Image (tube, rainbow, N blue to C red):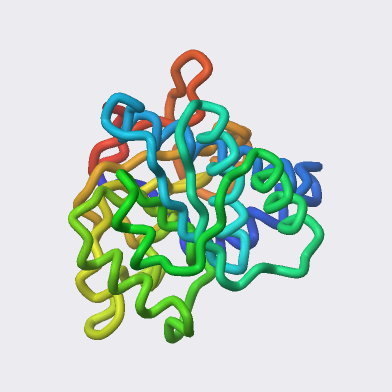
Length: 236
């Protein structure tokens, strides 16, 4: 059975519904997303395997999810470092960055240099709303993600991928295949092109919302905020 997915327009509509009739705030959704990502990283990169985590953050919501994940990882005992070259002027993102600064989480300007002293990378650059060309300063960052031998975990979409059609046919990101993908709320159509470990994080979704948008909510164990699934969406 094929995994049921949520396209870009449906994902945007769902987010709006969650923040209107669902009564969630964007702060809540970002916090839950980042928490999910941090738990996936904990499974993929247990502290005994290395505690240095490099989080590459874009200027939008995907980057905000990465900032939240960095905070949780710091509290788990990891040593996160954040690459955040295009800081948003939005108050929410400024507060998330300030929380990391208060925890002495370093922000770095040279992504390629930072790769040399990390154990795991979180790709929080672009999410499901990405389209068009990758703009500066991110082409070199995505190229580094393509070339690194380190494990990479992408949030919702491997950066540069089209949400419907997967990796670009050529150019930046065409050979980017992260180690793991954390689909937020529900998998997106691009998962049919993905070959790594796949997690779903969306424990806040109600059955009525899932039914309306035509996707499945997996069974979450205990206090888990993520579920690892196979190519058909079955829990592993």
